[in-house]
Image (cartoon, rainbow, N blue to C red; front, side):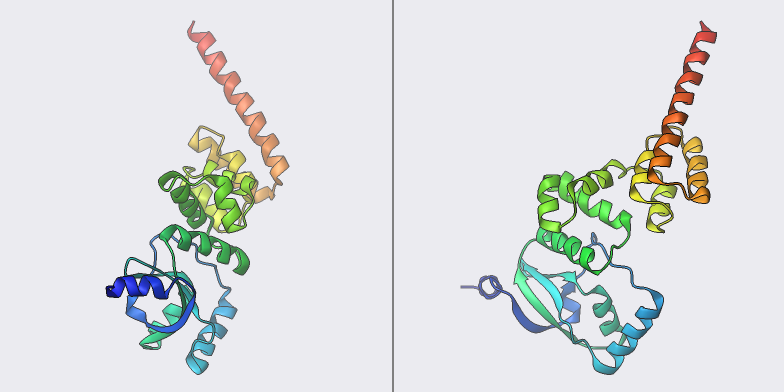
Length: 224
């Protein structure tokens, strides 16, 4: 039995061990929980003084160690010139890592919505997972995940407003229905300024779409 096969067998169950920092791979797709500035400073000081007490979560697949949870800890360990970090390692796939990342992020506090959209879209479109399956394995409601997919191709300014928590997801979904970018952006700024509820945004969008349809109809009628 080769070394890789031995490792596959070793990690069939979770194993606690110290791994060299440079072999831990950070997936291009992942959701990173945002940490408030004051807590981040305390976190950094704690790592400097006491090191990492809470092990990172890592999945092993085909000779690679894929980070699931612990990016902040990994970064601070690198900054402190540590050579290795405590980890809990178990065999799994990239899909497992992304789903675990989603679930962990949900418990720690939601990261950027744009990151969540990329992960969910990848699992759904590239890996063929149903929204129901992603929901069951991540802990997010199916309606929420469907809403994420619905705005996956929305205007960057709309997604930025979501990331900055200036509008809720429901409001973004409604605004994404407006087909004319300039009109949608003006409405977005109005929604933010007036702090409109999702229900108010829906009514606002419905009225705007009706007005746009009348304008289009009248223009066609005039041409005839």
